[in-house]
Length: 172
Image (cartoon, rainbow, N blue to C red; front, top):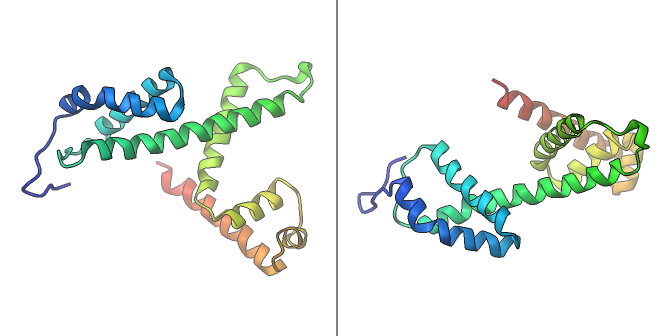
């Protein structure tokens, strides 16, 4: 990334020292929890470190807020997913309750699936979930979503193609 000549580069340690307190306060107000805010503030700076690109002095707070906002959204998504998973587990008989390791792996898989489906339009995602998880036929999906059967088929196919591309674009 090249910077305009009028911009200066801020070293990460200077950015951290100057704006960590502000970012932590901003995140604490968003999350309502000082510990989660501290974790996400740290993750924000780690993200900048991993990115390994020069940081302009033009709008450092805007950059930090943009990265942190994405991390907050990911945090809320994981939290909602975990709550839904734990509610579903509450219905499982104790004898069949999975081990902590299995629960952790299941949550990681659910997060990955949620990320894959996140890039889809809501109606496409809904058609895909009704078909794949709900066990509905294309005609039943079409009826439930008030679309044609052909459109339901197309939505499911597009969702499958999207998932396939996401899997293979991110594969090593």
